[in-house]
Image (cartoon, rainbow, N blue to C red; front, side):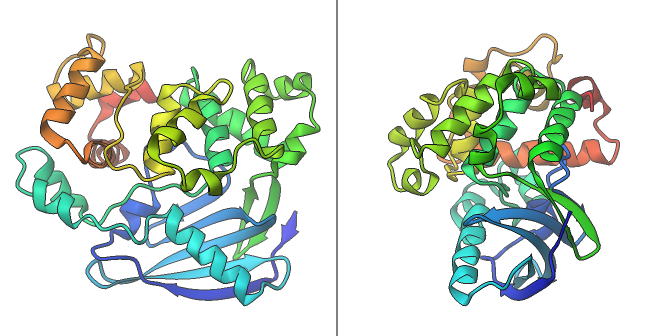
Length: 324
């Protein structure tokens, strides 16, 4: 375990409006031991430029005049230049500069989406991870119950991550890709990841050998980003859609709906038995007809609204599909 003895405090100003808890906590995300949330505060680990960090986000200000108190914890002293780069990365990952004015103007009076916007105005999508880390999470989610995904992620972090201690919390930080490259496939399989061991190694190899770079990919146009992600071994259209939306912030991304989502969307949008779902192409047409230009963020609002209901016991029908 690594204690983080140095700390730095930075005041962040997101664009207005900003809903702190609805942005910094997602009840639909499966629990992983790299973060902890309580209302008004999120603790999150992050490896930036090779340095494992502990972050603490605290709500300040109001939704209309939002502020975030960011505490950065490290094992070593950090330069002003390093901290400037870190803040820029956090602003990008956490969508702190996102302007949803046009989205709200178009849909605040929408019969279905309007009430959801009213409840969660200021919410943004959340991505705390690097592209590589997001891909690892996507891999452990493939063809698995949520319970099994939790176990796989716990095993990977316990074996390859760094356990950090800061601000009274003990949380794991993701590993460097080079570390996994030294691991045999059979040893990965021993961590109960199954066939995903090969995918983890092949994806890791792409990053460790600089065949793909998140920073370079951010500068590419959308078609190039999509193709580069699809070219990764074992990464399918569902994972690519999540990445383009959450990691690269495409508010209209919607080219694929997984069977799991198809069942939930059938109930959510059409009040139809989830086990007799609406065809995926009909769902995509429905979202395009109603929310073109903002399909991904519209779905995010509907989806998070549903999972907050589930968190407070108001959507028990979801239990069958979550199996945590």
